[in-house]
Length: 455
Image 1 (cartoon, one colour):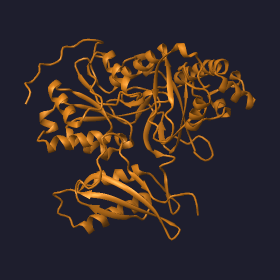
Image 2 (spheres, one colour; image 1 turned 180 degrees about the vertical axis):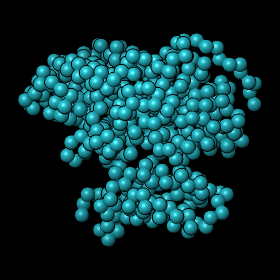
Image 3 (cartoon, rainbow, N blue to C red; image 1 turned 120 degrees about the horizontal axis):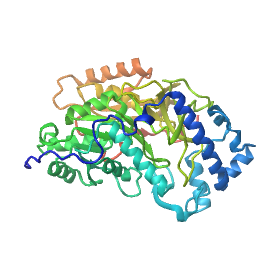
Image 4 (cartoon, rainbow, N blue to C red; image 1 turned 90 degrees about the horizontal axis):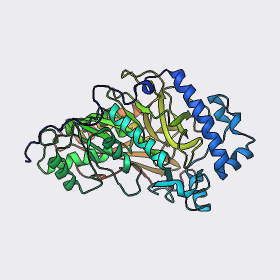
């Protein structure tokens, strides 16, 4: 075991304030809305004046930036989605005609993974980049990261928008370790060598890394110094059962973050209270809409996330349909912050299953599987079509030390699924380590129906 390192000396911003920007973070809801409206009016003018795409779209809809008099007026403006970004990028390489600055003003680009199509480029001016990193520092500060911490950034740096988020930790004064996506054994060595107190990765990988440590005879709670784990990229970080299992494994607190390459790294994150994720409301206007009707949903209800940038000059996004199904609240948080909070990412529009008329997401199943101590926590949903009807099978693993008969475990989970989701499913209980482990984002859905929407 490595020698115990002395405590890290305090440098950077004073750590006695719970807020990075106190006036901004605690302002009234009325102040947030007034600020948003002013930023949105200026941003629409910028998009219309400098982006060929937005000028065409607004003209076709008979709209001008000055038509936005209230926040509700934004609903009259057209939406766009990922397919539009790809189409316009291919039509007008390199950055597409949504771009609102010349290429010589762009200093950084990220790109999507391309898992659902051609990777799309997200450009940043120098000012865009600086504002993004300042918000990352604000999020880290809200989550309790301080200059005394040693922070290991275990996210992909190859065009991935999560890579530069490490600069937010550096900005607040933490010792920052650019670990990247190294093999698990190497990352564990780094965590031990530097006695890192904080780590950022995905929920699946945090789980996998903890299991790997135990298999190598390392007790994450005793042999490592990690006390905070920031997770993003999957819904698990906002599922209490998943978060609790990771915390039990590591002896650390888990904080969920949310971001997307089309805007910037982490756009929302948990404070120390960990009841929802605080949005970057001074950078992004948030709508949550019924995915079918486009009407706003009530607070606490599930709907599709639609985002509008407020300050990003390189490529404005006006009413971008993200495809994630979320819920939100505007209630003041117990931490004192007043920004809108994301209550959870419940799934994606394209991951939503409709099983005999009932909507179900993988995250609905995850909460039940992770809550049961007789399961390892790994699961997979298999959907097939039998006799013109959709059938759901949930595959889970029993723990090696479980003494409960397999049929009892299967029947117990079947009952919970039916009671909570209303879906009748076949449950298959497998031996430990049967299902594949993820080293980045876990694939939880195996849809074998082919043409899903064909009768």
